Length: 292
Image (cartoon, rainbow, N blue to C red; front, side, top):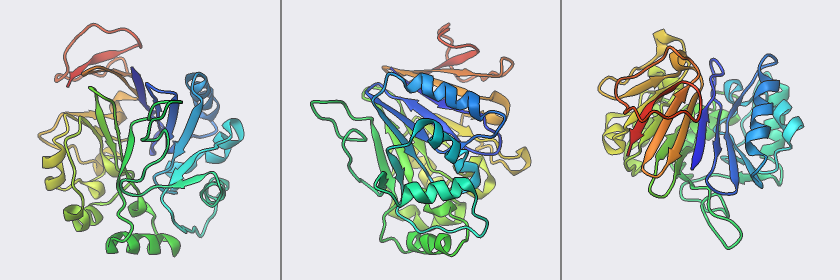
């Protein structure tokens, strides 16, 4: 069994994966003075049985690295995953400075399509793979190179985001796209060979500006799309697909077992009509089960 949690952190992204192996992964960080202590306490508790702790950073915008300095001071990030970049900011915060420090240190591993790494996606006699594979970037792609240059010049780093896939044997496949923007995805849509996934986290917090190309949606055929916490007037609700909207659901927990995902949310009044009821009670506010 593995547990994935999408934390409700307002206008930002933060996830963790408690793997069905000796690994624990955090994807992005968006914590404030109000909730930082409680979130870090939770992550410490959930990760205490794991010997490999990794932080995956999609890109260094504030709503994806907020609280990174505090997180590192409390947990000492030893395995930092990001794309190789030279992003700059005109208004450098302590969190961006920490990002750059980790990015440029010997703790960093740079992500690119089909990269391999012991225990990220390779198993050995010591421990199993975490089941994380990188589908993008293709580092010599001209549009990606342009995105890197813009980030280096202090412009938005949204389009340097990697595409990260997590899957377990005989179980769920999930996909994260950071804050990739619609125009960028349209430009690279023929360069990426996508396959079916069960759960897609909509890029750019579900905004219209991160609308996924139809060709990609047809290939991925997601059973559920998770829409983030951008203001509702900016959201794309992906008509024709089953969705869970984090603005309304709050925290979302995915309990992943063989051929099933049991789903729980923090808002006890939230419900959907496309999941099956298997009367699960591992956590509070069970909303149903996705059978794969």
